[in-house]
Length: 160
Image 1 (cartoon, one colour):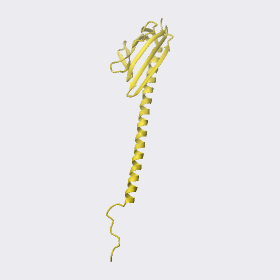
Image 2 (cartoon, rainbow, N blue to C red):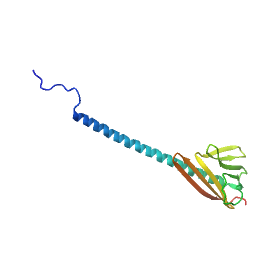
Image 3 (spheres, rainbow, N blue to C red):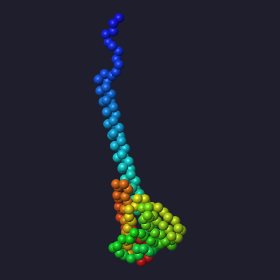
């Protein structure tokens, strides 16, 4: 018996085109998923930094709201200083400043304890705007993200 068709030893052009098309579709979907993942990571990092900045403002606000006396800056001025030194209701002396490692920290001189408030802090500036009105600015930067918050806190317990 004579065979009219010879056995196939490879892929036909149609099979190759379908394979290339499916591979291309897979690459497009993978590229889309990676781009979406990168966008989500960037958004999460940005949200994390803004949450840290907001939390640092809350921590500083709570600490300064218990201030009974501002030791530095102790005069109303238009000039900003790089730290705040104050006395709280328990008569403890505290300071808020940026360390050499760019971490916004609060140090309690009385109990010799350090609380790290916010990492990636570029600068912290404060001034006594009015007798009982402390104004402060926190600037943080990480990679391409740069955020600044400015807040004023009125304290009713502060001695003039």
